[in-house]
Image (cartoon, rainbow, N blue to C red; front, side, top):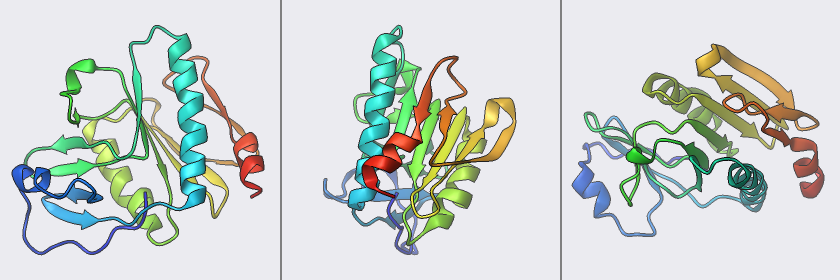
Amino acid sequence: MPPAIQPQSETITLDEYEALPEDTRAEVFNGQIYYMVSPSQIHQTILTELLVSIRNYLHKKDGRCQVFPAPFDVKLSDHPLTIVQPDIMIICDKDKLDGNRCNGAPDFIIEIVSPGNPADDYIRKLYYYKNTGVREYWIVDPRRKIVTVNYFEGNLLNIQYSFESTIKVNIYDDLYINFFDIADLLNI
């Protein structure tokens, strides 16, 4: 995700969050709102390539799971209010979807690191995703050309791969993402 701007000092309610202008990019951690800037071209290119690969795979499978790109809200907690907008997420429990957001942890999340605030993805979101039931979380870092895989179900944390790798999505038996093709497309 793009870098977050410092939070407001007052906590925000769900009603206040939902009343924000539609084009506002923000996340909420422990009731504190963090505004975000728009993503870069590299960020969006990586997001698109990953999204298409995952969508194509899911369409070939039973269709039980859905993939969503940002901006799409995920409410991880009501008290204190915690809402995130992962770059890419797979949701297999359709009961978590209410037409507006995902209520609860997605099964799989990918965040693409923005240069201005890498700690957000590597520390804050890692903590929240691990502790709210996300099964697997990838951190894609274009600057370092590294993908960090956290497969919480298998207790595999911070496994790093280069952009020259083909990486298995652990929650599936046969889904692999070839990062070499993505890096080649970007000339990075």
